[in-house]
Every structure is written in C-alpha cells, then in structure tokens.
Length: 148
Image 1 (tube, helix red, strand yellow):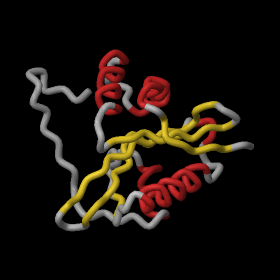
Image 2: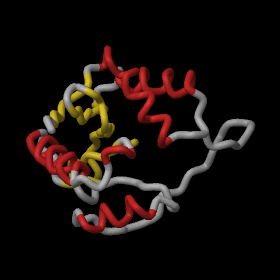
Image 3: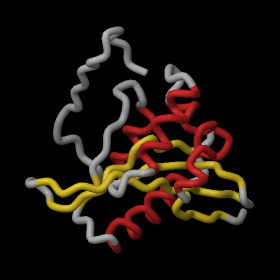
C-alpha cells in the first residue's frame, strides 16, 4: 500500500467533490463546486489529499488564523476518508502528517468542529488528544433558513 499525502493545488480542487459529497449530502454539487473554488482562492486555506496508489481516498481542508486565546492555529475542515479505507489507521497517519505540516507553518494549536451525530469522529479525535472546549453555533442567514 503506497500512501502519499500532499497539498492539492487550487487548479485541482474540484477533484475533492466526490469525497466532499459523502460528508455534505444536503449541499447540491454545483454549490459545493462554487464554494470550494472560492475557498481555494483564499490565502488562509489549503486542501490536503491522501492518495493510495495515486487515487484520492482522503481530504482535509486547513484554515489558518491567529486567535487571541491560543495564537496561530489551523482548523481541519471537511475531513473525509473514503469508507472503503477506514479502520486501517489511515486517519492517524493523515493527522500525523497534518500535525507536522501545520507546526512547520508556525501553528501553536489545531482546533476543529465535528457534527454532533458523528460519534465515530468523536472517538477518533479523543484518541488523538483533542478535548472539547465549547460548542459551535450556527445561524443561517439565507431566506430559506436551510443548512446546505
């Protein structure tokens, strides 16, 4: 098994859509495409891909910011490993790479969000040394008040 982890170039960002759709089942594909193209154009965002024999099997966006309470931090976002490759310690390998990568960029912490019902991810993050420090609140401002 030949695993490679690397940054996905902004010009290739749409290659993450099939994996992203596994996580974002409510968001129409054309909206996902618009959003990730915009994200890829930002200077405080990058997308990381995990490849097995050249096939994209895992993704994580990384948002960078400086916060008064922790300093420079990275936020993994839309973390997905294809179901067919789970329970093979690939998530641990992926996050070890991410840790090294963001430390090299000067980050002092990693903080992230996970959906309330995603118990599998909660267990994973606890095992990786993450702690819960608060709640993530969301208010939809669109007229339809829908989350997508």
